[in-house]
Amino acid sequence: MPSLPASSDFTGGSVTEGQFKAAITGLRDFLSGLLGADGVNATALATLGALGAGYAAKTAAYTVVVGDRGKVLNCSGTWTLSLPAAAVAGAGFSFAVRVEAGTITIDPSGAELIDGSATVAMVGGRSAWLISTGAEWLYMTMPKAQNTATDTTADRVMAVGAFGLGANAAIVVTDYDAITATGFYRNSAVATGSPIASSLYWSVLHLAHSSDGTSSQFAMRSAGVPGNQMYFRRKGGGVWNAWDKVFHSGNLLGTVSQTGGLPTGAVIERGENANGTYVKYADGTMECLLTPATFVYSTADLVAFTATFPAPFLTGSLPVYDPRFADWLAVGGRLFVVTGRVPQMEALLVRRLGETEWTTEILLETVVPPLENAPEPQSFTF
Image (cartoon, rainbow, N blue to C red; front, side, top):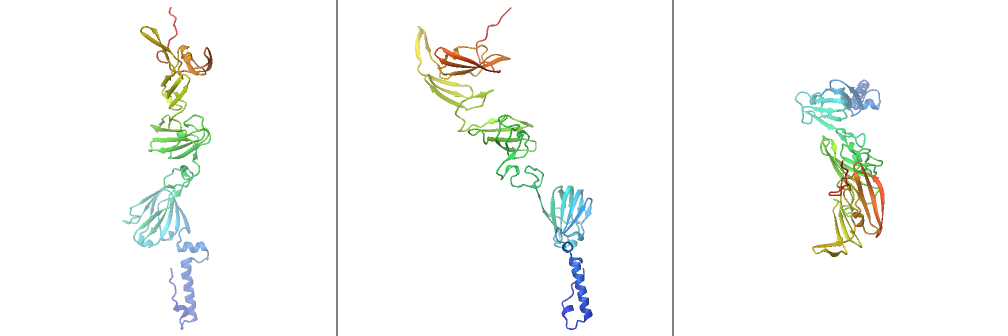
């Protein structure tokens, strides 16, 4: 590039008209070399080597030249981008690399290094700014933001609300079983894999432990029901375990119930009536304290008493209905019992209306394991 004429070429007392014109021409050549000759801003920026002032698409092995100063090289494919010697490029020489697809290996000249490494590999979706110090190359990455709130692409910058973090609502899903990324999720419609089938308004924290799919989930019911319902489960070997209910001060006490030996209601239930007090446990155990209980001598060696249990209940089915359980009900009490044999079994609800009056209602057909030592119906033999 032509050099800038000296000031004396314009202001010297002995400068002739011809010399002055020559100095003006030299100044024009200098400015056109510095800023370009067409007076267009883009040309001036490109000539100065301003970062981003130029663009070039590259699809095969390429060596950067001094004319690439400030350019954005948009690369695709898998190949090597070679750098000129840092001294040749000069201190401050810089350009940007954007990898659209593939893997681009940045290779400095000879034994020179780039940020202390012999080479740097850039994969699709990454961008970087490369700067020469005159002795080596510096490498400044320009990471790309996530495309969506659940984008798991490597080297992406997380946005506010990604995976439910920092937002005023978690990520909406329709299948909790299919979640793979750690985050906060919710369902506003029926979702597969929720703690209670066909239920709404769960908020779920998913923790991915390793790339093989081993995970944990913690779920809390956000709305729609009273109290705090909480569950957790684990996934191993590609299979989710059943949800386990979390018991706390809000649901430890109440009405007990179970399905298949697992609690579905409270853990402990306590009550009392005119016949005494009782404590029920979720495993099917019940403790009764009878009041009053009158003992009489049945024989000289046997003491007997008659009493009504405050809250009798059964944890298994009866092959044949036993009316003694109904006799043990207090007036106003109820008894749920399953009778029959597989596959013909039915659930009954027995109510005691008075001292000598009961009602029996058939609720549904079901299958329940039999009560231990329950009376068996007489069988025919031929």
